[in-house]
Image 1 (cartoon, rainbow, N blue to C red):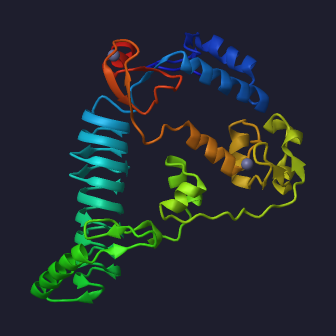
Image 2 (spheres, rainbow, N blue to C red):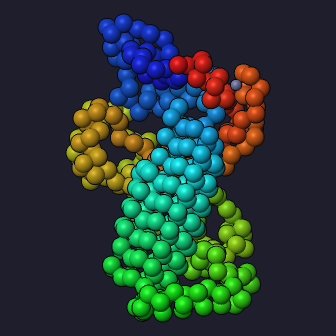
Image 3 (spheres, rainbow, N blue to C red):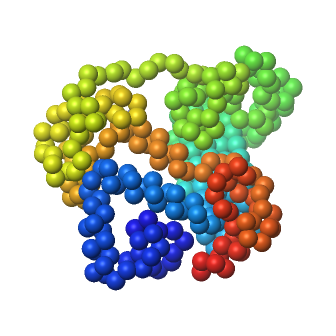
Length: 354
Ligand SMILES: [Zn+2]
Ligand SMILES: [Zn+2]
């Protein structure tokens, strides 16, 4: 409970070992079925962790020659964020299913992806896919495509299944396709798309931001790369000021019982006011049953605020130069120099905690 930097340890609380009986007794004393006690313990644990060294980045010892954050079983890859089983890649994120090989500027998701460049949501046995979005599985030699399933040799196509040698969704013979594609690529270089801000997007660039209608501030991009409204607009993304609708509150969070045992299913009929944003939220049956099973209190925060809190705990996709707090070696880490964590290089961390 509330431990850090331990391996194969059991019955520890704040890194202190107890016998099984003592541990059970201590847990009882902590009385973590109480919302108040649970929150106090969390705060104390976070303070305790800050007194102990952090590893240069989140990853495992199966990495070789990598930089990034949340990187596992990866080789020869740089500036990665959330990657598993990548090889020879750079500036890739959300490679959640291994493997991915020879990829660059790629967001999601691997699963036997090869030679993917400036693309997102591409994977599952796809190779040589550039400037594409949502193209999978078994795609090959695609450029500027959107929603192609098992497409091969397509250019500028949308919503196709099992199609080959298509340009703007029209099918050609192989030779015609290659000739026309070459011609279009050359034309894109000399007559690039110009967006509303006057920026040029020649062949070799991903689609401009104005092609998406998703408001930046409502997307996950905002969590990883926060921007002000002015910054967002000046970079050509959309912004949406609309607030979600509000609902009348029947139970303020302050009136929630401290433990689940003090509640019954009538809580499912209440509209609770969030302790952070004051907006209304409900508890659903499945959630209630799980909390009861685990003897955990009803949360005082709405699902959105809980989600925000979880995201806030993640380190972000930005790396900083810093030195190891033990050996002074240069490290490249998601912990900015002004952050309070004590950061060790991988070698020092492993020496101390293996
Ligand atoms: Zn809230
Ligand atoms: Zn060190």
